[in-house]
Image 1 (cartoon, one colour):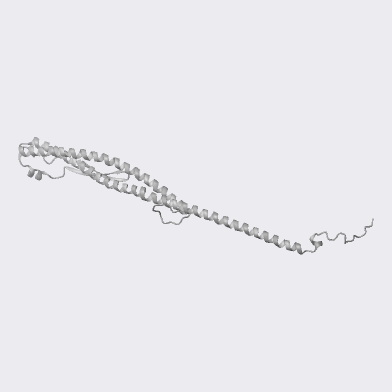
Image 2 (image 1 turned 60 degrees about the vertical axis):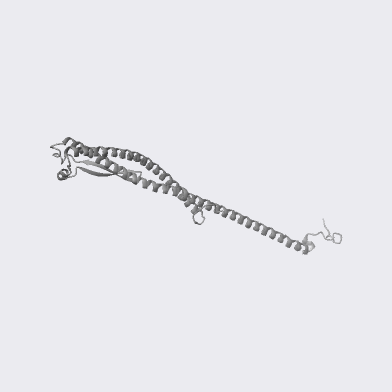
Length: 253
């Protein structure tokens, strides 16, 4: 009667059946919403994964060019690291952070804010100025690519954790919560049906007993009426008596 599989330990009543059906409906709705959220996050995750791959390839090419341009500067002007350190007064690049909402998940996004002007106007003035400017632009491009890659990598890691958690919730609802509620509904329904059958059988037995009691009372009443009729006098019993021995009164016309 109780069905197979795990179920909740609950007393089978019609109110409990109604509440369990409402909970099952809510679990099915939540499963549908979480599945849609998982699909949306997975789509965004795959798009970010492609962008991360492209950004890493681009970063490799940019850093290769930057290393080559730095080698050109070193060959043309020598070591200029001390000049750069002396002339660096303020940051030429600033990173701004903003938030992006994807299906309820907040993803940070970083943007590069390049400050106009330069602190290295006199670097390479004697020789190698062209190589210095080219190295400067290449490294600026490398910083922008690095910030873009950091933004994508951060979003990638956050989405990976959220998708795993969402998958666990979806699987838990699909394979644990919903089957448990369905087994509970089957158990309550079977118990209520059994109660209805028992009630019907009880009523049938009561009705049969009442009918047998009524028949026994009727038979007893009839059995008591027969001796009473036999013990009654003939005139009261309705018998004819001795017609020849009786004498009718004279009838005067």
